[in-house]
Length: 273
Image (tube, rainbow, N blue to C red; front, side, top):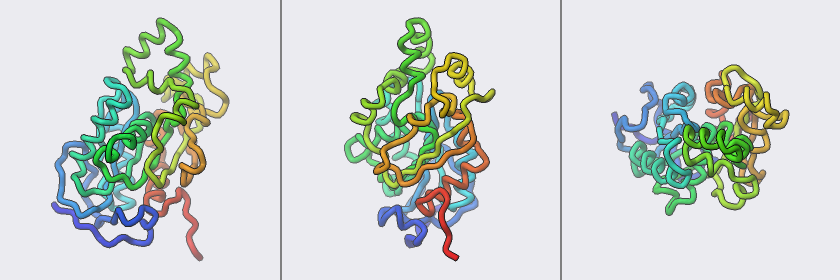
């Protein structure tokens, strides 16, 4: 089936003239490699999972966003535990190009380290050959990870952690100052959704961080709240959900918030009376 683009509606004007809204479709969200369709600069939503996760972890969110916006949503997988962040950026950009086609305007929805991979793609020549028109980041380690830094300082635990999680955890162990100085800014407009549940049976990392007091009170069990944030000039809107880090993308309100941001540029738009 060929998707045809409609003219840019007012509700997507915040994405600029680079994008247009596709006709609503009843097709299910696609996985990476499902085939490239002909497009006329329509908006395609690309989902990027986190560290040691897979594309399936984003599919429920992809379906919610697809049903709410009518946009095609593609969950793109990448080898999160096998490469450094710079290597992952190059590989993931190629996968996004292959999945979306050369003319698509791409809006990214990311979970955890997927947001940092997205930021590193912005440092590639021509932003990796992808026409980015914005992003929504769920629980991203925008200013590095205290947990990564502390684990890597412990010889035995650090060796096990790196063996399991891969080279990217060394990059995630960057200090906030290093992240601010070296990591590229995300595509604009950019919305951030933080998680706020610091201890959860569904997030094993939170058991460790709580037991050893590794994070401040304001955290999602994996990241401190301050590690999720970016400077105000790089963030269009910010909100939070009462969720743990690992499954914030599955929260019952996540789909609505992400869809609102795509359509209106705000998580909770103010409707005229």
